Image (cartoon, protein in one colour):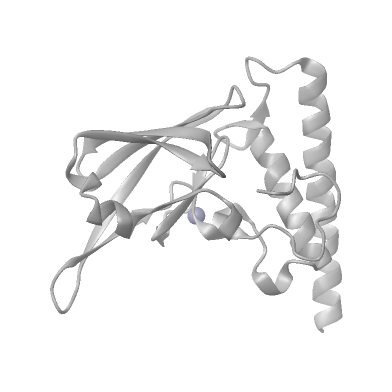
Length: 191
Ligand SMILES: [Zn+2]
């Protein structure tokens, strides 16, 4: 990604294409779904960005772990794989998004999330430069800097300083408020 998340993105902000992602159809072709364990290093612009390891949990469930190179971050998600028989033969595999449960061909990889396109909160192409799209992207990033307990409770990561955590938390709540505000503004413009 060529944008560090600070300031407003230029004329063309980051899109989903800039994010690392995994592809269920590719994985099927490579035979990954029938391996007990597998893993690989993911590189962006020739540099190792993170490593990914997977393990079969049985009953179509896969444990996917991501470990980032440059941050003390990473996560493990349990992802269901659904296989849909094609009318003309063959099987279409789907990931079920660990956040919303929707079928997805691609899952996107963040520091502490592996999630579907909708759950990334990234704006569509047409929304890229609008206020709402920008806030939504910043909000998603701010959310990903935090660690979350079930029930949507943010907690400080083991390695994070208290000050940094408080700053991240404040950042998140501020953006959350802006998001609601922009959303209302957009809605008002549309009626
Ligand atoms: Zn989702």
